[in-house]
Image (cartoon, rainbow, N blue to C red; front, side):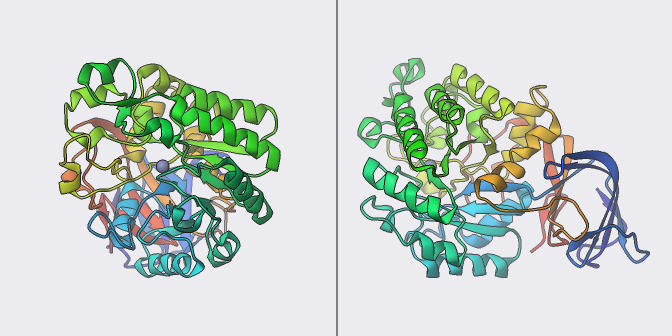
Length: 437
Ligand SMILES: [Zn+2]
């Protein structure tokens, strides 16, 4: 991307010769964009700084609705500043943060604090997801209504499931009255206990304890039924098994308000990566990487729209923690800075999906799940925009991540496509890979 002016020298921009891909309005056309005072405008003005964006895509409101920023309490892994910088570097203008910090985000004051700290940093909009139960202990419901009034966009005990069916039913009923979703990390811990990877041919070969897909899909089936019973919005986080996809389809066919998200790593990698990385726990993630047949089903579900959201489950950890033996290391992959490239490589350049449809999974999709409105690239709308070079080839180098978490099995992998500039409220937060602020 070429520009004749320095960064942030001006707050009005004329972005020239760009392909506008706007899943909010369905527009896919070449043209120019004008930004002034933080918003899109129809009017070209002479004082606007010209940015030649020939060959690039302009996409509004790239959103990652599942990230772990670890603050408060685990700032040695990530904090709101390093997480925000990783988001801007990855091309994102909105992230929804999971509440499994220390302490857990289960009261309105903590929701309010996260939002204000995010605004102070000013690199990405932070939408907190509050805990379903107090301390995410799965015993009694948290003050969801009060957290929503403070700005929480949904509720989850992510990291673990809301196990008890009676409590899950109550949570869904309560959330239904609030008009926001329960985001379920579907995992039967009784079945998954002690497991570190998917149970199958590879786990037998490498000799690590595995978990079968039913530990996830069993909970999804139950919750889909509870969603039908309560009429509540249920969102399944990081769906990864064929059985879970069948359950979501079953629910949708019967009118359940159920949605699901897939992660880039489940769309790109299989459990073979565990064998390839030998005993390095960089591939240890929950839910685990699955066999090729599961990955193909997931790709198909994203393409068909059964899965309407792609989210990274960005889970940074300290290097020392991820250097532990496979059995002891924490679960998670640092994903914000590889998400877009991985998704474009797996779904666009493979010919499976068209750009507008694919980008809807990272824009309109999460907005609908979280019941958030955004008009798209229209005059008067907030100028949150990502410029993407869809053909840029690059190799993943975690040492260059803005995230503190360098833990990724994507290291060295060649991807095609990446964000080259990110704009939040009309100001650049990243240009040419460099985060500004
Ligand atoms: Zn989770």
